[in-house]
Length: 191
Length: 401
Image 1 (cartoon, rainbow over the protein chains, first blue to last red):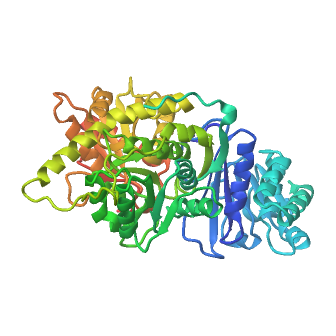
Image 2: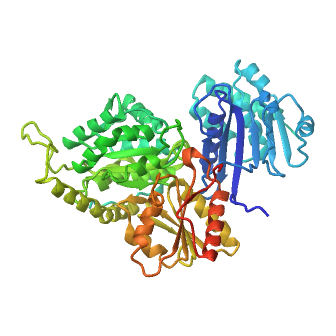
Image 3: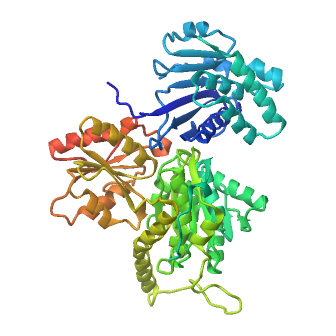
């Protein structure tokens, strides 16, 4: 039996491309958990910034201080914010059997299960690209994808993470992201 | 020592900060007079954030954007000589370029705080973490303190000024965090109110400042006549650091409830095998120790915080009863008997009649991830060596061979 080095810790892995805001949304979710009184670690897969290249980010959330310092190898939740990555990386790699897979995609949860042969856990899909284009007019789909992850996992309250985003982006950008997140939370399909 | 009082929880500010940002906040609250720095990854956020504080009028610091790290440390020495509170930040090649002036800062007894986001040295170019940069500077005369998490980075940066500026010490201090692994990792940090920091640190009281009205010469020339005496005094000064460090931590603990010690003892009391390491791998090692203890293994961790001066007595006291001590370190000392941390430990243990076995594993060079399984591998190897009764002087782990 494999040893469990992450007892009591919820671990996320994010996939995106450099410049899409995967590091920022990872931090926003972390800071929301912090605002709700938990301990966090939010860190990118370290490397020089390369716009467009696949990047990963990691998040740990726990009610106790977190001591482990290593990448996340067996996440509880995987979030992929870029639909074009789904043919490049396998987002289910290392994902726990009862884990949650959250994708920005036009596919249905069933289509996702078939594509990745992922038969357990939970699959959440949302067309965050469309939501971002409709509301923000630009492909900022990190925050709406995060909203779907929040809905699926209940890891923090949606209001908390929206407030974190508003604090980070006061004014119009924050308000538009709020609208996008609320719509994504409504439209996300769980299956 | 300043009298301080416990700061109530509601006066503390909690924020999610990277290790770098935590240090920047500490530098801000320390009311640094002069900060001279040159940007280098992964330290960059420290100076960027500090420049933001400056641009927003939150600090009155004279920020000097110099043209190289050699100039950065030179400017720091000059500023410190006038009696100012001075800080800078660097990493890797930047620290290497400071080299010449590191020795000047220490031997001229300038209480500069140098924050380092530990990063590998070229070639090949690598921006990621290991300890080759600051380990290389271990003989420069700087006090070296290593931090595990962002909270500790904040706390240690504040304490570093009080330690450095104490007249019994008067030496520069390096505050080191693991590049990227901590420097770019957002964690929960509890920050003191400004006035509490102000009260804790006070204003630096220079012993003999540069002053145009009362000119003196500092650090010019000493040959066969007096050079050796300077070094004798410098040696005495660094050995005064532990005593002062204890007092500083005691005062800090009164304020915050937090202290770290020169070494942090984690479940070593009944341990047959003790892991000795520092910075972020020490955190992972503690998790591994917990997990292995559930399997019935008697293992503990000794996390080193102070590498210079090396706390010989404290380390020996904690590990002398163990069957083996496993060193994990992120540095190769090419051609040496073993690597810097294990060298210190083996030398410290030499005078004991019965010594624990020491194994030395070099891990994580150039930012190679150190998952718990790497620590377990070193543990299992050490158990095999114990059974055999002999171990190699050192080996590398987690590398293609």
